[in-house]
Length: 233
Image (cartoon, rainbow, N blue to C red):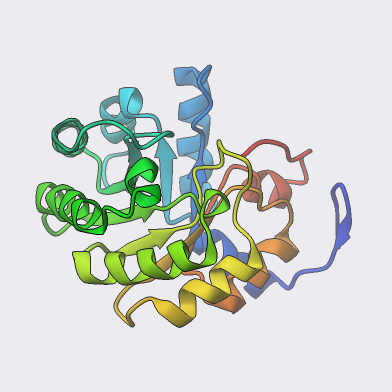
């Protein structure tokens, strides 16, 4: 039993499963190296999937962690309207600095203009830059219609990307159970799902995994397990 903002009972095995799926995240604009280093230490100590941090800290974090834990970073973040060439450059630089996973934001204006071919080509270009490394595609579901969500599931499935990701955590909403369930129905079997933003409890995390999410983007899960007050992404 653990006391947080709410009282939750989660079995030890479920907690390990949740932590193993967590991209332990710190993307605040004011993040310092001391804070990033703590995220790295906690990510290793609690058996997380990766640490997800700003591009400017990737090299430091990768050098600090070595082979202990993969470093994930964000591209075109959080608005997605950088040009394709800029996103490709960002991805290549992050990988050169030691990133093992890339989370890119799509161009949401292109979604509203229904420029599906351009969206597909951009994801494919970033995936080429990533090679065999993991690419997660952030679609910012809170800004999409149901039709757009389904269409993007199809595009991400066709693109060669490894994951579809619900949210940046910096817009009008984060992951919802409904969106994860929808993605699970409409992505191809080889595409995994990352639920990100607004995961406020261990119960939330468990629900997302049970609905089909493979990864969780969150800054709160480790804090909850440590019995700390959990706020943020």
